Structures are given as structure tokens and as C-alpha cells.
Length: 466
Ligand SMILES: [Zn+2]
Image (cartoon, rainbow, N blue to C red; front, side, top):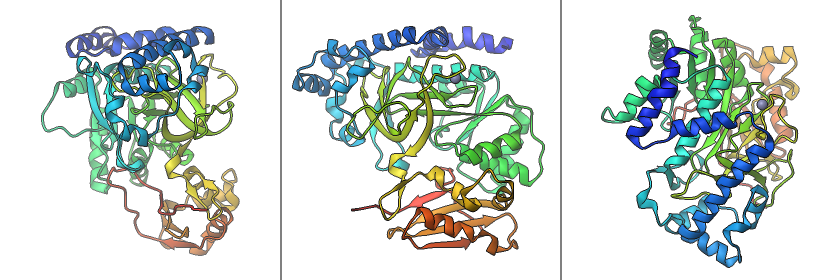
């Protein structure tokens, strides 16, 4: 670790914590201490935090006082993850309906920030983030970055949309923290044309970051620009992706262009989910110190490890506005086996996607958006080299499903003069999955990005009804 990073970790961040009433450094120390402990020790710590949260909710949060009473429960009845099944799940709709009742009576004495989830996953939802939850989320990231060999205080360049790069009118203490302590330079990825990419590239070359962070899709647009212009890249420790599901294709492009490993993060402020990719890149380690994750069916029944279910999370840091057994809307599974890196925390094998964003065929079979790029390979086979050659002729794509369930495949090719016939197999692949849907293939000159700057490769207006 460099001298600057050490000063940052042990002096500057603790000082900033004191001045701003935050506690990242304290949380970070806890997480460092628990990083390699046994499963029993980790569970013990998680249980203590869970029990404290239950007591608080019973006394201070009207919604939970009522639920506990209705079910004849006392806080002591919830001692560990398995006991959580005695409580109902919380959904976005319930949060909207019971906002006041879910707010803790002692909220005025807490350091909080009001938040809202983005509109991209449906109706925006208001909620309150408590400072300990925020601390846990950052401490969890800092610890993971150290796994990868990237230390806080080394230069970081962030390319992101609104949730990562907030536009402020004035220079605030938060900007000072970002620029001089975190050394995190942030750039908005809302613009994606060549002149914006050139400006990103110039900033990247001038700043010389040790890591890049951002949405996979935003970083991929930047990587494609660099590849297209054959521009040189800097030696970096890693790329940190966050904020959306990282498609395997995107990971490959980023690794190839920047010549360094990509590590993914899965998090959500609503629900306090924190999970970071293992150094072995074989799944995402849940930060068990900060959240209790269960994979359940819609009603909250816990599924065995290995089975895909709804991500159901209890935020161990949010006392102001507790999220207990909250279904964030994603689907995922927990790997049945322990991770070979030696960490005791459970590993999420794969986040399948926003449940609300799953596509359905006319028979009601759900299709994950992560499947769509695979359908653009001949025979759905992306291991075959000849198939990759054809696939690599595609510059960008978008799959649009209309209200009737019919599919339009939009392809932007690297070379417009390429023989279109060779992509006909895409229609067959999609017809195989979207049985009964009309599938058309169209070649376009450009694919418009979403306002967030994310590249949306999948747009569906179809709602399956029986
Ligand atoms: Zn691991």
C-alpha cells in the first residue's frame, strides 16, 4: 500500500468521519477484522446486529411494532437468519403505502439522507438511508477493492450516470472528500457521442487513474471508442463495475481493451445489499456483516442454495427506515459450495436480473435479458470460434419487444457493407425462445442510448397475461 493510501486509510478518512459525523473508517476496521474469520464467527456477528435491529424495530418503528404484535412475536424470537421467515417480506409497493409507519420514531436524532430509487425499474420509490447503512456500503467496497490490489487514495476515475455522478451547483465538502481524500474524479456518462468520448479520454490520459469505475455499459462505450480510434491505454490495476448487471460480453470487451481484470459489484441502497466479486471471479461475496440476504419465492419462503429466487435483503445498518426482508426486484442464486478463496461469506452465483425487467414469451416463460446476447451467436453457441467471428461484426444491438410480444432485433454493424444474410440465424434463435412471436431483423445506423447514459440493449413493452 502506498504512503498516500495509508495516510488516507488511517488518518484522513477517520478525520473526515469525525468532521462529518460519518463512520466509514470504524466500519472498515470491523470489516477488515472479519474478512477471513470462520463461518461461526461471521454468523455470530451477523446475529448480534440482527438482534439489535429487531429490538429497535419493535420499540421504535410502528410498522414493525404492529407486525410483531399481530404475529404474537417478540424481538427475541428473531435470533438469526433462519428466524427471519417469521416476518413478512417488504415490497416497493408496501414501502410506498406505509412510508410514515416505516419511519422510525427517533429519526430526528439520526444522520440520514433522503433517497429515491431510479425510474428505470418502475415507479420511483422514496426512502431514507441511515448513515450506518451508508458507511457499511462504502466500507464494504473499500475492503473489496483491497482484495483486488486497488487502495483507496489511489487515483480512481468514475464514469457514470446520475446515481454515481451527482451534479451539484456548488463545490461542497463532499467534493473535497471525493477529490482529495478518495482521489475519485467523476465524469458524467450521459453524453455518448465521439466528442464526449474524446473528452473522457483526454481526462483519463491527464489524470492517469489506477482504476476505472462505472456502469459496465458506460465503460463499454468508452472502451469501444478507444478501440475504434486505436488509442493507447494506461496500465491500471482493475476496472470496477457497478449499478447494473455486467454482461459477459461487456466484461470481455473491457478486459481486452484496458488489459486488466474487471470486478463487479452488486449493491442497492434500498435494502442495503452489498456484494462484491471474489478475486477468483467466481461469484459475488455477500458482505454478511452489513446485510442478511435470503433467496426466496415471492411470498418469502426461503429456497435451497443453488435455486434462483428473489433477492430478499435485511439492511443491518438502516435504523431510520428499516428494510427487513425487502425484495429489491432482482433474481439471483446463492452457490451451494463454499468459495475456495477461504472467505466464509456466502457467494451469489449470478444476479439474473431485475425481476421486473425479465422478458416473457407468449407462453409466459421468463427470459433473462442476459440471454439475449447469446441468441446473437449462431446456434446460441458462443464458445465456437467461427460463431464469434460473425458475432464480432456487430457493433451494437438492441432487442425490442412490442406490446403484442413481437420482437425486433436491431443490429448496428461495424461495417455497413457486410452481407446481411449471414445474420439470418438470429431470427431462428429468437423464434426458438420467443415461440409464436413474429421476429424481424433490422440493420440500423445508430442505437440511441437511454437518458441515464446507460446503453439499453433490451426494451420490452410486453406484459404476459394468462
Ligand atoms: Zn471467494
